[in-house]
Length: 252
Image 1 (cartoon, rainbow, N blue to C red):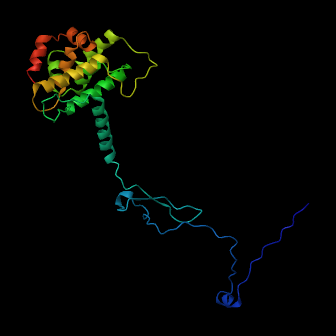
Image 2 (tube, one colour; image 1 turned 180 degrees about the vertical axis):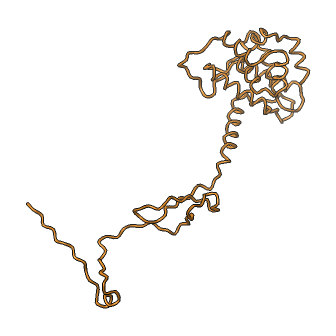
Image 3 (cartoon, one colour; image 1 turned 45 degrees about the horizontal axis):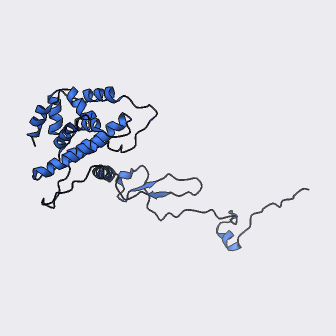
């Protein structure tokens, strides 16, 4: 069955319009083409987004609509993201560390962990994850102290020939390597000796009755106090002893 189509002829406007332009024929619009609103501010050609105070990004002209498409960027600055991430990381590490509890008769103000101690603990978790260990042990706490590197305890260890490379090598030799397909959790939980080492650091700070923060030296001496732990064995193998521990304790 054939379908016949009728030709479309131009429709003439009234004579009044023909008299103004006798040679022009005006076609009636067959369909209205949708257009985007151009009320939003746009960038002039060959201009950069840095010169626009309203912080707008303009796309080029489109062949369909014949108008500019303007997208408004978020007003928040990207420079604030790193600071937010740092604050979130510090908060997570602080919650992972044990909270000091004051003894009876001590002031209500409890000591806090120093910034270097918090960073050392964060680096300890990272070292445990690098070695793919399921827990953060005293050996990881020792490596975290050396990775942070700016505390008096870290400088004392390096002055006595105890470096991060040697501690890591002794750790692998003592505890072995983890399975290559094993992945540590984001925050490997503390082993029992590591937990006791941090608790020892808190107890010693509270017993001293002095103000200030719990620093990295407390953590190092806490590691040494845990006999037969991995961190204590590694320190002993590298030449650390009770005499050096007493020498380090004098810096407190």
